[in-house]
Image (cartoon, rainbow, N blue to C red; front, side, top):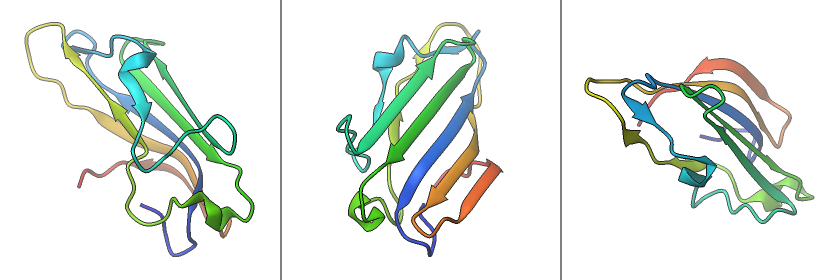
Amino acid sequence: RGGEGGDITIFQVNLVFDSEVLRVASSAACTAGEDWPADGSTMIFSCTTNSPASEVLLLGSCAAWPSTDCGTGGLIQVATVTFTAVGPGVSSVEGTIVKIKDASGFTTTGTPMVAG
């Protein structure tokens, strides 16, 4: 969720899970969310999977000027990650916001993610 400072301009999120129970088949199973229209130009999205197998790293940046043109304020979906069950058991999926920055320059780092 973007803060009072407006549109999100940069994010880095790390997801961690039990790779004996869940797997992300490839980077193709990790796509930009509907509210992060990655165009490869002003809107960049990158996803690294299976390095290590128990983690997914999500990165995004918006280089629009002015940054209010990013259109990434409020509650937004930045990514969709599809997991596949590979073994018996239960696994939580935990996330950390490594870094998120909004148009005002406000930056948050090292914050656990909260669902909902």
